Image (cartoon, rainbow, N blue to C red; front, side, top):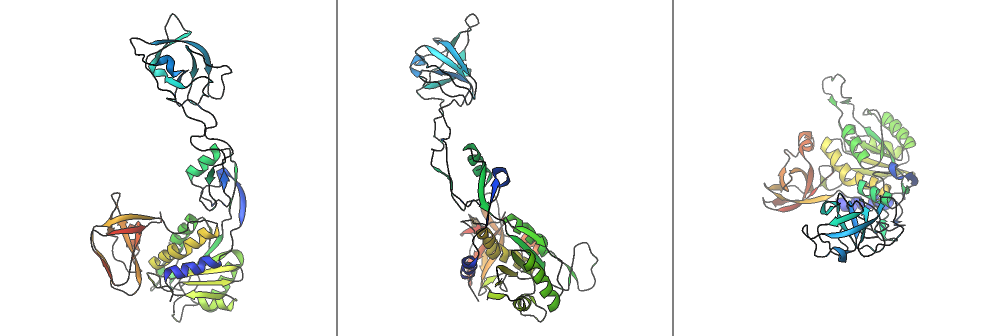
Length: 401
């Protein structure tokens, strides 16, 4: 039996290098960037005004007040997108708008609200308040200098990163190709939701939850029909899935029961198991194997076991497959307001709820078949074997949404 970190390291070590594709920036949201992108321009590309107002020389308006304003001659008007061809001299000003380039000779901007235009002298502007040198000026390159790294390879294209690239003039990016994941559920007792249940049958729920998690990890999911507990049927389903997809994720059929056929069917198809069983709870009977250039992630059948093993072992693999540098679940610190205890011999990833104040409580009964507590949870806490965590303990909560 492998420890979680060893199992994950084995998976990540043998995965193929990510394939690539070039997409428009608008198509690339959520994808993993494969190449470092440097700024080809300064951001902002020129000194400009953050407000509507008037470009001035700060010395011309020093010490003014509403009772003793400075009279300035208006010598130009610069809408955003245009420039002032001249140079500001003593006693003059230029009308600016938000984003307008700062004229040569100006070193500050007086906000419109702090000025007045005399009714009888439309060519003059009264500055009612002083400004310091470079007040109300956005400087060239103060956000990003030309040549600086905008995004490193391996980072995910979030909304903010996409906006930054667009501001720098980038319109195409090289991103990791999304792998296609087959999703199979094994079990003769399983029925599709909405069908009529006979005695001893249950509705299959794992594929519904896992499909959302697979898509959230950036992969393309292809859901296959339920596979009955039969060796020939299992082999045929696996052969089809391996032929059509980059990898196969199964749930159920990987334990030691007489009706568990995933591992034997995989081996009959030429697959080689890399390891089986991970020292974690829920989810010990996890299987990982290779068949040529295709891969098998065999998850347990119990619903919470399937979801947790996916989050901790399969999800990181899907992210690395696409070129991501950071592949683990994000973690947030919080404080237990009630104790958590693990009397077992395996690490227990316990379902918890964490509120906005960082207070953490158990989400409910922790058995691997209890979906209601997973539905209530918004995180997992890793509790070591034979460990009691009292209320007040600071812990890390692994989040997936």
